[in-house]
Image 1 (cartoon, each protein chain N blue to C red):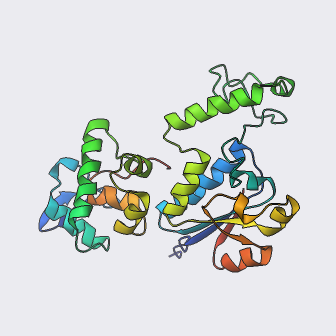
Image 2: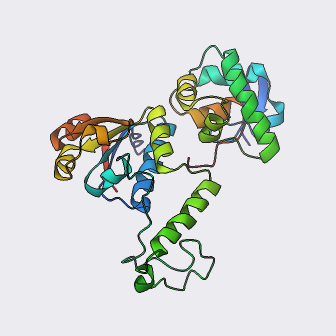
Amino acid sequence: MSEQPEPIKKVSLIVSKGSLVDVYPALVMGNGARMEGMEASIFFTFFGLGALIKKTQNSLKVATVGNPAMNMAMPMLKMPITMPFPTLLGAIPGVSNFATWMMKNEMENLDIPTIPEFLEMFTDAGGEVFACKLAMDMFKLNKDDLCDEVSSVLTVGEFYERSAGASIIFT
Amino acid sequence: MPTKEIAGVSVEVDGEGFLTDHKIWNLDLAAAIAKEEGIDPLTDRHVEVLNFMRKEFEENGTAPSIRKMNKLNIVPTKELYALFPGGPAKKAAKIAGLGKPQGCI
């Protein structure tokens, strides 16, 4: 008889990048963990902080350059998935905005909240949101610049302390 | 399909204990399943949420998301987690006699 693996009880997610598609997965995974009864926290660092800054959290964008996986079906142009989305096309002003708009519509259709609403839902669910102290210092930010969902600004050491017993996931 | 004795009745359930037929559901069954899930007693507030979920299920074929119940002011997310601790969507669906929720949100 093989032993049953121990169920995951706690997850700590780290978000270090700030495009729309960099931030959503961590929120989905973190919220999903709470839905399954696990403890969950998300630590935002470097450009990931954009999701927490009141002035920028509503305007995160889909990056349309430098992503070789991007194609004419993703995001949602309803053309063949085999047709690449050339990175030079993505550099044209407005294209990132357009792709962002398309994706936001699709998200709403799938009942996925916007970033600020998702953060609220995650904290209402008992999840914790942390900001990285070093990145805050680097970008000259104060706690006041961040949305109310942020419970603390942590050093790396404090983050690891709070993650005791958790699976740490870098997204 | 396995059967299981709940509240003195033999009912069909799936591998995880969700009722396979939501139509046989009643409050006695709900209270018994709730007890197994560690929720005892089942209050009027629980029942309000369960009734809404069942109504949505009958209209749309799926249980409502946590977000939808929050947005429609049926039950705020915080309260839902307090009512059904340790996995609200799954537990509430189970107690409501509905299938396991398929959504990720």
